[in-house]
Image 1: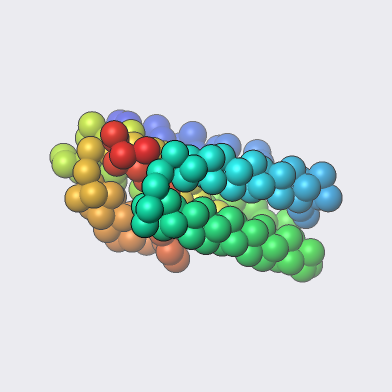
Image 2: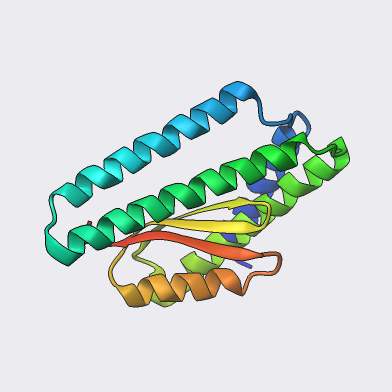
Length: 167
């Protein structure tokens, strides 16, 4: 591993322990805030669709609704799992695992020669990796998803990347 990878892992693990130690169940305020964010993103996505016409507009509205439904379902699942009893040790371990996965995915994306110029952000929750940001082509999107899936501990990959110039 190079110095960048080692530093990223060390920072992520340290951050995970500090966050994991004080992790609490999803509060009502956090839930409402997340629900409001989902609604705002849906409104923003629909506004983008309004500028389109024909089949592109229809597909855009369908995609926006699907994205909203998926986000709501994930939020509901998070709220349900947060309500389930879980020891502090389990919570801390989950945060550490997610931080390590995030660091490994970031390092793998950075080290992949074809993706070096891409602006890819990585977030992980419960082993589910979310990739977002801007890439040059659909090929870069597919490559980044493949790279992320190869990392140990990754349960699934959510792709929210956008090809530059196709927003």
